[in-house]
Image 1: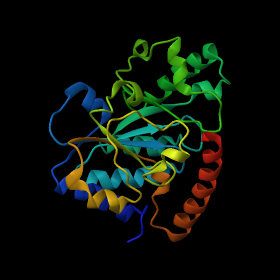
Image 2: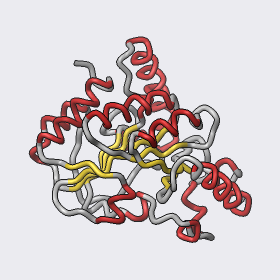
Image 3: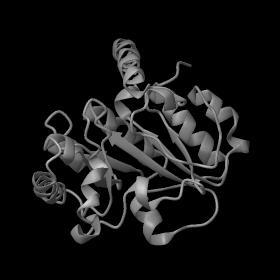
Image 4: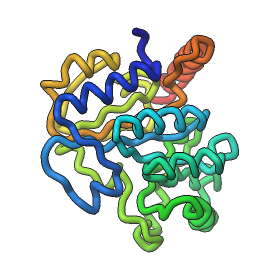
Length: 249
C-alpha cells in the first residue's frame, strides 16, 4: 500500500477508531471539552477542493466528523463542494490569509476578514477559524489579532491560540510527510511531545504509544489514489519543500 493515498487515509482513521479514539470537530471540542481518547480532525483546504470532498465522504462512511478550513481564493472556494461537505455533517471554517492578501495592511485585512467570514457563513455558521501559513508571504496572518479580536466576530477559537499543545499531540502532513517541521514556515507548535513519524504507517504502528488527545491536520490535495495525481503531488511537494527549507533556514 502506497502512502498518501485515500486508501492509506482510510486505513489511518479506521485503525485509530479500532484503538478507541473518538473523532471530534474543533468547534465541538471547544464547546464540549470531552475527556478520554479523542482526536480533533482538521483539514486545511489549500488546493484541489474535490479531494476534500473525497476525504469527507470517507469520514462520513466511518461515522466521523471533521473540520474543513477553506481559503477564499477561487481555486479552493467552490460553493458546491463546501455545501456538500457541510451536508455530510462536517464543520466548515475560514482558512484566513487576509494579512497576506492585504500586503500587511491591518485596516484592509480586518475588512477583508469580516467580508470573507460573512461569505462562508452562507454555507455554515462558522465558529472557528485557522490561519493559512502563506509560506511565500512575509506576512504572518495571525498578526491581525495584535490589533483586533476574532471573538468580536463570533469566533470561539483558532487552533494555534486556543489549543494547549502540551496536552494535545499535533500531527500534520505539512510537506507531504509527517516529520515536516524543517520544511514548514508556520505550521508549527510548541509541545511537550516528541514523537517523530515519517509515514502514515509509522503512526499506525505506534498507535498504542500515542497520548489520549491528538489533533491531526491533513491537506487533502496530498492524498490521491490516481497514480498520475499521486506522482504529480509528490514531485510538486518535494520542490516546494526545497524552497521552504531555504526560507526556513
